[in-house]
Image (cartoon, rainbow, N blue to C red; front, side, top):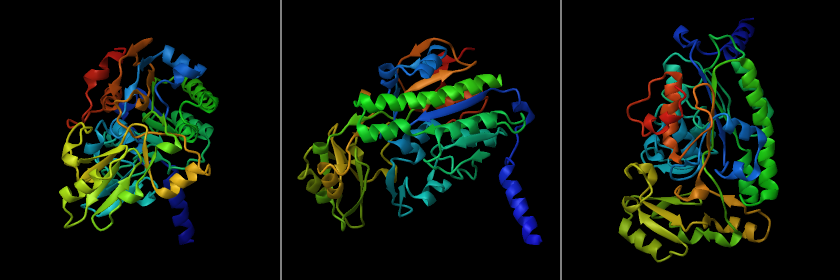
Amino acid sequence: MRFLLLFILFLFSQAVPAQTNRPEHYDKPYVILISCDGLRYDYVGRFRPPNLLKFIEEGAQAFSMISSFPAKTFPNHYTIATGLYPENHGLVDNTFYDPQRKEFYRTGNRKAVEDGSWYKGTPLWVNAEQNGMVSASYFFVGSEADIQGVRPTSFFTYDGSVPNEARVQQVLDWLALPEAERPHMITLYFSDMDDAGHRYGPTDDEHIGPALLELDKVLGQLFRGVEATGLPVNTFIVSDHGMIDVAPDKLINIDPLEQDSLYLIANNGALAHLYLKDGADKDTVFRFLKSKEDHFQVYKIEDFPFYHCSQDNPRLGDLILLPEYGYYLRDSRRIALAQEGKFRQGGEHGFNPEFPEMHAIFYANGPAIKKGLTIPSFRNVHVYPLICRILGLPAPDDIDGRIEVLEEILAE
């Protein structure tokens, strides 16, 4: 009987939100932050998805949103969530090594992904919760981790097999909750365009167009559902990066560059981080790698030009291998599979975000947003303080984003 009672209490604790909104938040607006992973800045103009076009026409957009370096999924989602560049928030790449922890962080490692000690900064949902505002997330980088000991009131462990329709319905269910329990800060994630871009490449209109139109149908369901609530909901649609075609003959074999006795390598394709082992001489390793350069360059971290802040974060490594634009680092096994036609080599990303093909999207719509406005391209660190302003949350003093960059889209 005691076990049964404990089990019932456990189920109840999972069903009831961990906190409720403070009364002063009841009348505040709502924000839904939607990430469409890999949706390149020019896709909507090329394929004219009707629901997104209407959303943009009735709201605001940027010509493009400039990703942070590297133009990879985890660093850029977490930059959008924190207003910090990757070298400051700690997720410096999809895969990297932390010399102080003596551990690798990999996106496929659930233990690391859910461990809040890897993450710096104050994500939007943590900021909300710390200020007595309920938040919820249906997938967003960092939302599964106990960052500063905090998770969203409601969240889900990532499962790419969950249908998009189920994700949308959950958001609408959250908005239907009583005002004390209703989340004001909601994040939502879709992977469709990244999946299609990697498989087929961004110039394959035959596959990219239909993928976007299918996603547009689901977004239309969300837009109509949100409108039916009558709530003051402001919706932001962003992406993390763009995509370029990388042909099998543009793959660089990284295997001959490995020297296990001298350094560790965290290979992310569009760049690789090298971490010297104790006793290894940086100049010696640098000369060895320089002698191997072929469609890539090697940099000492202190000379690497693409970080906005500093190169002092040890997670960045001691040296970086940077392929030429359009080339990609792979191991010999993956290269053989691609060249034999057993693995379809389509699009890739992660390159210098200054290249337009790496640019992402930014669309906004809601009562706090001006209608029919297009602004120039801007860097994705600036989304965070804008959302804080709308929700009436304090933005941390140490973020890299600035409210002045996007303040002009506010209707007030």
